[in-house]
Image (cartoon, rainbow, N blue to C red; front, top):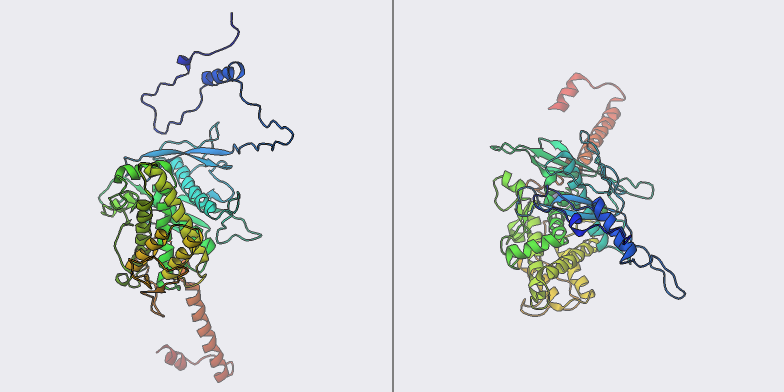
Length: 487
Ligand SMILES: [Zn+2]
């Protein structure tokens, strides 16, 4: 009798009907026995790390990493649902890693299963912890890759990191109970997400369950690590607009970095990005809770700078809208359905535009950066990257139509090489930011220089006291003088 132990294939097949939500296929015991037997008897694998003279040794692929289950968009985008994702790198109970940690009192830390994975049931506290961690991790990884040098990912520090402080960003998925908002806090070194019951609704809405909201807030944290002066309310309105827009664009680029999401966009729009799509709609569930059918905001808009005034949220929409148009233009230009799958092209174009924007923001001034500064950096870098001139034409045309820059030649002509375009609509020299419609981050008191206001008041008090002392030679103020001062 043949001594080989071969488990019949029938015993290995998993019954696929009615799989539970969040099912991730994991090898069953019979299947592992079967694989082992096949490997040993019928199909021995290649020996690992075999060395031979003159042949470079193969480096084993890093095996660290975990599978997670997460929302693709948010619970309201039912046609998308959940996805399984693989997060490379070491992820420990929490979840946490070197850069991101989970710190939510009231939610037990999530332990990985025996395969090192974090697979939980949706609409539970622990799922929320994993989903939120996963989106923050994916966002940071996306930008680390953009700024990577050689084969090493860029460290991309948080705003508080330095040679002696490597503290991670702390994530609180349920950090703001009964608050209709979410924010990034530099002083708390944290992302906090609110949950609330929308008026007229029965179910509680959790902002942490939104892919868009979590990636938007993480975008603020990433940009704050690179340009710490941009988030302050004392910066010009356009600088604030860049911060807010970067949050929205982060959500778009992160979706475009995920192949299944890109395929869904192509199928939903028939490859026309100006058709209605979840990609341009931000925070759908949150928007619905506020009675808006296009999400909290819509990247596919036609706003111009002269229409936005000092309102940072509106200003941000001008930049986001221009970038979305440029994305659609480059995608249309690069499409060759007869040669390559549309989803593959959109994935690549999204990746390039993400990289171009990030590098342009890094190259822009550390203080008081304008939209024109970033647009000109995009033109310069696209030229330096050796991209077709059409790319720069799209960038120039869209930013010209949005009244960000003035073109030196008619828009029907090709862009001038090495050009730096003049700004069109600029902030008034003393313009103050109006952050009313912005997200929780931009409205957080810590970015409003309020300590400076208090300090100015303290200084004024000190000056008055000094003057009083001089006049009265250390005597206490008389009641009549106090009254006079109070008038
Ligand atoms: Zn924001």
